[in-house]
Structure formats: C-alpha cells, structure tokens
Image 1 (cartoon, rainbow, N blue to C red):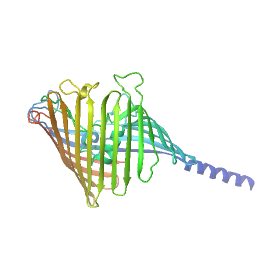
Image 2 (cartoon, helix red, strand yellow):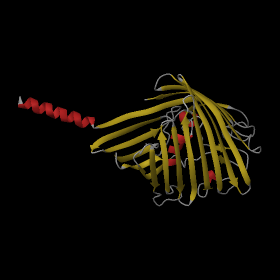
Image 3 (cartoon, rainbow, N blue to C red):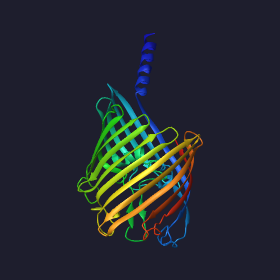
Image 4 (spheres, rainbow, N blue to C red):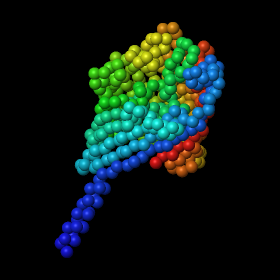
Length: 355
C-alpha cells in the first residue's frame, strides 16, 4: 500500500513539473504568384528586357502576408512570478526550399530570456529592432507584409537609385540585450542595446528606447533608435479601431542616413529623410480589406526626392490558420524617376498556412 502511494505521489510530482514547462513547434508556409511590371526605363532583373513584365513565384516574405518560417518557443515557470523562456526562429523560401540565410540557422530570432511579472523581462540574443516592433503592431496596416511601409525603391534612373520609404533599421539585430517593462495600464517601455563587438564596418552598435500604449481600441507608440554616430531614427505611430474600420498612421524622421552603409546613399552622399503613412483595415465576415499609402522625402544636397508607394489587399480566411490573399501595389516618384522603378506595379495572389 505504501509503495502504491509513493508511486502515485511520484507520478503526480512529475506531472506537475511537466505542466510548468513547455516547448512548442510553430511556423508559417506562404507562397504567391506575382506579376511584376517595371517602369518603362527599368528591368525587373539585371539583364532582362527593359519595360517588360515578369511572372514569378515568390515566398510570402517578399510581398505576401508573411515570410515562411519554422520555430521553437519554450517556457519554464520558475515560481514566484519568475519564468525562463526562449525563441529560436528560422526562415526559408517555400518556392525553392532554400534557407533564407545560408550563414545562420536561426536567422529570424534567437534569444533566451528571464521574465518577472513585477520587474519586467530581459532578453539576450538576436532580436527584432524596436522600430520594426512598432511597425508590426502599431504603424503598418499589414505588419510589414503585402503593403509594407518598409522598402527600398530601386530605380534605374538618377538621382535616387536607392530611394527609401520607412526604415526598420535592418529588421533584426545581433548581440542584443533588451529590457521590456511590465505593462502598467496599457503602458510599456522597452530599451535595447546591441554590441558591435569591435567590427563597426559590419555590425555597428545599436541602441534605442520605445514607449507604447495599448488599451481598448487605441494603440500608440514612439521609438528612438540609432547606430553609433549615424542613422538617427524617430518613429511615431498608432491605430484606432472604430468597429467598422481601423485607421493606421505613422511618421518617421531620419538623419545621417548612409554615413556608413552604401545601400542608403543617394548620389554618393549621406541624406536626411522624412516619411509618413496612412492605412485602413475594413473587416467583413471572413474577409479583410486593407489599403495603405506611404510617402517619403529624401533630402539631398542636389534637392529633395519624393517617392510614394500605395496599394490595396484582400485577405480571405478559409480557417483560423489558412488564408488566401490578393494585393496590388504601385510605386511612384518624381518625374525623372517615376518610370525607372524595377517593381513599378505588382499583382500578387497567394496562400498562407500557419501551424
């Protein structure tokens, strides 16, 4: 009898321990068919015919509802309001099965964290920038997906071969330490520092701070983020759910863009930039209609360069995990670059499945 009671107690203890920790496999598979129509002075791809459109199959990360990925997330309850958790997330291209990043397995996120219900969380590892977090949850009506506010508008026509819309400071950053405060009545503060580790040419030190408020139908936030000595970026944004529709808005101001990164140079020089966006989400039944307009002014010594991107998308939920979607986007700019965008107009039809 005593042995039976001991065995039952051991099983109960094991069950309780296992209930306090968990590991979950999750992910998304997303693919679409895209027709890309370049401007009359541009090619979709290097070496291709000028002004001729191209049909492509793309992974959802390019212009769909979400990039294909798989990941592991785990948590352990340490008691007293304290927990340990981690996230490991890897991207891939469903159109060809290739890894999104051949140099690293968990290219999207890789961090371990300690969280306290009273003191907040500390995360260590590769994480999303605070500017991207604001775009995802507050500013962009598609969360940096099919109508994304973040894009480099490649043009074959000077003076803007790399005209940019909103920034997200590289999407993710390595070697980062992030603090997330507890949520007080909908208000939360975050701070991040990412070490350059002595290789400033490739991996500059980043720091930033954000404040957000989310309660009921209102979500607003602001972020300041920068790399050491260059690319100072201030972003504010938010959205409000009126019931029949949700309106989104954002504004971003950047200075010294391109001081150390040639990708952002315009005419060989560093620039300042201002951008804003307006978006609307209208749900009806299993459908969601989205529209967004994003504009940017790049301030150069030779004068200002204005570019815009606008479009609409329709999503249809076959289930809680599977969506069909279609989108059309248009890119435009000053007269001397308007016909030179390599992706002037895009038509997208796709399907995405979460697991």
